[in-house]
Length: 344
Image (cartoon, rainbow, N blue to C red):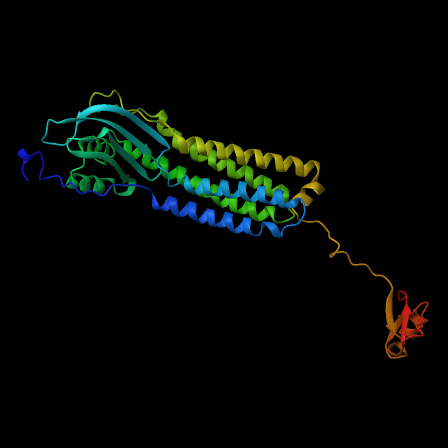
């Protein structure tokens, strides 16, 4: 294994690349289990409220999983392009590859894919993750592992010692954006609790607050676009610049959805509050809740001078038995039970 055998001894062939965020996968599975659980109890709901209830659960879970998942995605901003660049150090060999930089709230994800994938007797398909809290340590490990030059070049721009200072811009903006997203998640939880209570107006207000915090997180992340960017090139590719990507636009769509739901709920609750409470199955009296005092059956033997009621007549006190107070007592010939109306 020497340099002249086209095998570089300082760079082992075996590598472990970042494939998928396990935290994001866990979040998706948890919300899928919740969705399946709620759908299983759907047949037990009677009437037209079944479809409305299903629609509410699906929309609510969608908003919740998006808010949580946006904290762990790696495509808030993306920069990518094709280039012809050197592949490894101490070598003049060049490869034609597609390079991608994916920026999230907790770190960056750098991809390198050959075009074609098999070049220089090697499969060029890398996907590496660098977290904000230990970027320098992961960069040193990348050097020890002998990752390709394009990945090391981009990762170096996000180290603490880099004159570009990109890590300070993206790390702090990502921390503020993540904090506001978790606040939005708490507001979403509170809104779901209020939707199950006869306070629909406040639930709609909390949905508006949820949308506001989602917009705050987007504004926090957008501050990096207003700062002077560090221009750097890679091989034959031009300037490597980032732009908003899927997670940013998904956050915008979710915020708009929360805002529309909140405003609609507030308006409808002010216009038709009874219909809204009926739609959300809160604060609606049912037949089981109605108490109807109809004709009752009283035992005449029990009422015969046993229990008395005292009337204060001002000048004197009179004790009257319950039997005397009963009005229109009728004897039932088939039993010893009397039928009576209300007691006066």
